[in-house]
Length: 83
Image 1 (cartoon, rainbow, N blue to C red):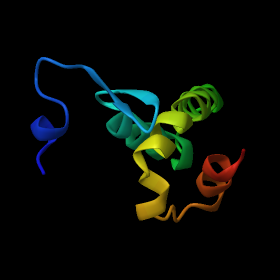
Image 2: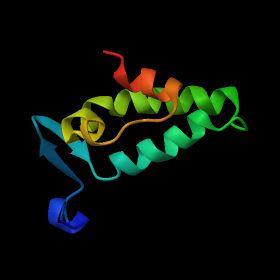
Image 3: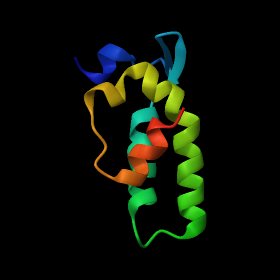
Image 4: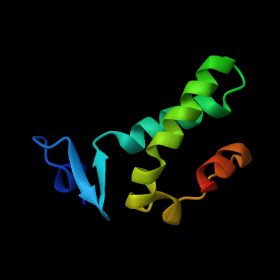
């Protein structure tokens, strides 16, 4: 499956397992995860990345991301496993 098969160019969001997921959610998660684990990130950058990840968790879980991928970083894994 290609990205445009899941969400065509004219759609910016879709409904997955009862949750609205915006296009770019997984990409934004990956960028925020890198910021969170980067020792050169400022405290403010880490705080914002963590907040953005927390807000995206319902969508990421609806997509089943964590059923397929295992997070290697312990801090990131704890954050994403929290209820």
